[in-house]
Length: 322
Image 1 (cartoon, one colour):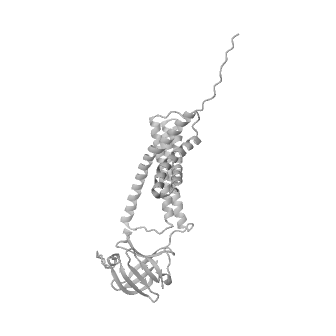
Image 2 (image 1 turned 120 degrees about the vertical axis):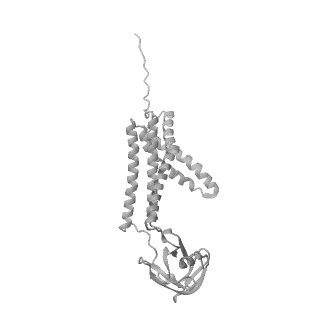
Image 3 (image 1 turned 120 degrees about the horizontal axis):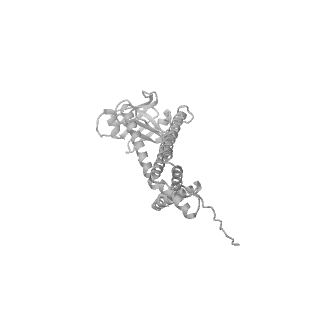
């Protein structure tokens, strides 16, 4: 009696379905949407964090139109950067994950995908961090680039991988749309939440220092070596203050420097904030200087021309009263 022997073969891990041209298009768009959403969220966080530091916002219709145009340009740039980053980084990492899993005879899991992200981020860190360190930038750049590249890649790569394992073009493009909407929603929620936190005082935003008379007394200097000396008896001496002061005071375009003596006192700006009222012969009468900087490093400044230009002439305290 014949006996037949049948060898039992081990189960081969199932891999993701082969993705066609339309599927890779959906994957590319998904990676772009994820990267753009990450960029938008980073900009929102950067903007909110900046509200804790000294900042100025222009007002008026021209300024608002400028802000709107800047927002449109930012959105377009984020979209283009996302499309480029998805093509040169996200899709290659997804392909690397699939190819390496097949070569190793393993199932292409999320952990395997994360390992591919780590390998790609390491390569980026070495290519960018080592030359920077050799040029004097310091070796701390290497782990920093590695961390940023890895954290930036992971969400986009995982979302893109999810597209490649879906069946049907509709489901794949639908996931791309979901990623885009969720990213925009998250950025909007963080922005509104941050502004609410500042508005309610939960997070303390920047406030200009409230300098006392004693803190104002001393020598203040500009970047060109001009000085303004405020004395405790209320007198003031200006020595070669920059031409910005002369232009602001006289409304002309002269570049002459101003020197002279006069008086100073604390006053209030039209908006009610404290300022320095300076009256120095030869430098214009009644110049109002606003307070900026911090309590430790205060500045005195006034706008050059239209405040909406955000162009200011500033003095930094060089020394306290003798």
